[in-house]
Length: 414
Image (cartoon, rainbow, N blue to C red):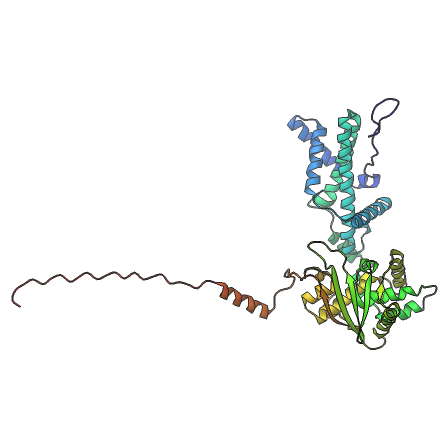
């Protein structure tokens, strides 16, 4: 808090109350929350500000504020999405076009609102300690109103969900434009078709073709290409050495090697030749992209086909890997430490077969998370192992009770 040099009193902190469009939309929820706070204050014989602050803390706790720590890159995405929705006067449900899009916008809006509520509450505490009671009351009231809106949007039993919008769109006969990378991967051009289309684009840098071929053939993450990869010729095919992204103590593969071979000309043979020629020219075969290079590739792919992106090819190659390998092999190909995350990428039945996925090796063993029901063979093996692990059944010892000796016969003539 800044001290005014003239009055020697703390100046009001920089705050931002909920925008007018959001307050108008949830005015009923705000009024109900205020009425409940007043009734609670009368019943407890407390000041209403104390009751409001208690309710704010309860909402923050219920929302799980402070229990997770998103990465810096994720925070930037959340802040950008939140700022765009605030500027446009739209909620996540208003702006979303698909279910996955709604989930992303919802996460960003939640994060932004929780940070705003927590900041207002901290500033109210600073004002209380500085004896600025008017600022304290104003900040607490603003935090309370914003918390009431947050509860109505995300925590209440009747909070908005995607099924409401999808049902209304079906009734109207309208269908939003899909932004699904999985769907784009099913209809993606072959690697050779992509190179031909890029070659016909005007004023396109030639280095974009190598980056695009790398994405189209191997389906790696953009962050992994920015970290640098090594291209090695293997017979008629290629091997790509990748430094994994999204790696920590529990997830990801720090290093993996991906092997492919081409199919006939017009599918992936041309793209493989382009990367083999690059590896021969560079000797060591190292290829590294900058953020500007990746942005150029994205623009070029969108010009070829709407919705096309590096992640669309990641889904396409994941489909090819699922059609050719088991869960462990797919996880190694995608750079996962478990076989759970692969359920979000592609489908084996959607494999186009334009690239032969020969296999992948990674530095970390893949942990099985039971993402799919076990096969009959796996069920039999598990049943047999359970039977073998059981201790042998020991029958209780039979106690032998000695028979009593026969009574002596009386002496006398027989």
